[in-house]
Image 1 (cartoon, helix red, strand yellow):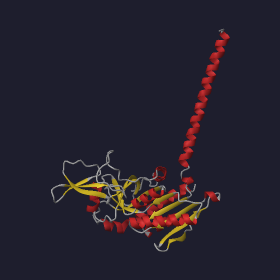
Image 2: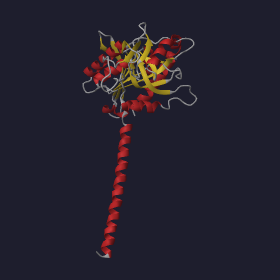
Image 3: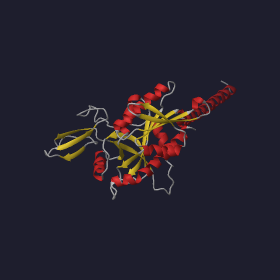
Image 4: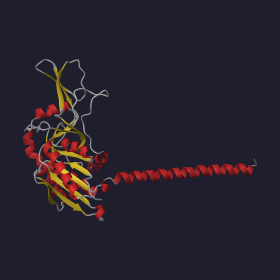
Length: 333
């Protein structure tokens, strides 16, 4: 092989390597841009959003923030289910954003039956549309000392605190991290083992303890977390937190009751009476959901939990309305 051939082969190798590098860089830039578009387009893909609150007070706070021409619709005469709907016009009809809003009434039964009635009625009347996301909004009680009135708690998991197996067993028997032990009259330990809503078990599976939690839709949870991270300025006393929200059939109206719940699930942030029921129904219907609550009553207020709630529930509801407004503004872009 002569000098000329060696030079030409070396040049070709350099050219091939250079071309490969350029192709690699191009593909990397393309993938990054594709990922960015996917991340920012989650909100724009939403065409119908259902927002649920328990009380009219919470619903009115949202209406005040959105300034939309809501029209009331009867979903079910027997169950007396109603909802409000408004359409935000897009650049074309297929880009219109439908906002459905309803206060279900307090408690898990009201929340789940009203949710199902609304979804069924909407599907019957809008054959070509579907509900893309359910958002649970409203106020809740704090389960941590650090939370202040008006703070926002975005749920990263949801647990029904009064769904558990309670049994007397020997002290030597192992318990899971979600168990609570208290002395019983029989001088044995009373074990409370949390169950996932709608499930029943009296022993752990071979794989370990059963997870009692329900989880929000990952993409919309991330979107909600991102758009609320700067909603409070530095001078504000309020903050946005991410954590567990508990749901049960009773109103946690005393500090003692809140302390018991905080011991049952140590990392829980807030407690309400509806969120888990909505989450369970959405899971069955395969509809994405997210949930957040604003704090209306502190963990251990001197004036009492119920006094806190009566005094600050409206203020807390206003902050919940702000969160919904931020989310809808993002969704319609």
